Image (cartoon, rainbow, N blue to C red; front, side, top):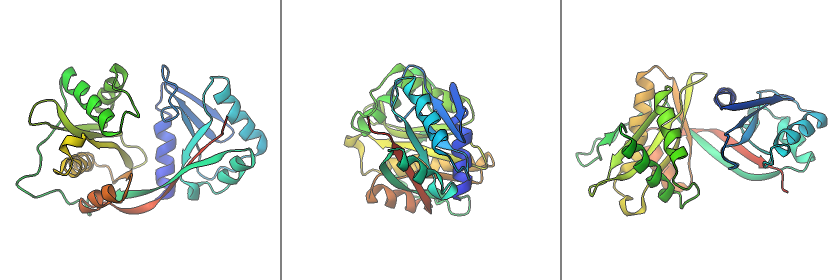
Length: 251
């Protein structure tokens, strides 16, 4: 699964508005944002970078005034992490990822399960973007660009789902990338604090996974932020798949 997820990561970065390839790495940039979470690199599976390759990679970021940063499955390219660390890169995080397939998906069956919807109007995309910002403690500020990214995901073959709050607006939601290499990444599962504990995350996760499987995608994968969220994902059919490594070069 590691190689499949890494091939997906490469294909997904190549969809970015600005893409640079250097020394066995693919770098994707999001113009208008300096966020390290939207501007990063990933290696081709099996890449064995030299010191010169890493230097060239660093230069691609430095000339844009951005933090050199990578996200990848280390088992799919075992030579990458040692080469990066030799050039000063440090570990930001190591995340386990979970995988769901059509055979393991278990949609919530409770009569009280939240109703999941597809956003249609500009107001709904804006409300979802704001809800996700609140859910993730403002790591991403709500913005027109954020709402546009969600809209583009839905329009280009991915999927976006949300649960409407009883008082109006959005209780929470998530998105799933357009598939590549037979799999798709489900990300940004978030629920506003006032609406947690009501099954929102499980409902949107199951709905998004089911939507991708209906289109013929063989698997959906995601990373989780804690044991509580892991249990939510396991209940709807996600199982351990491997690890993802996050490295960056300190200033």
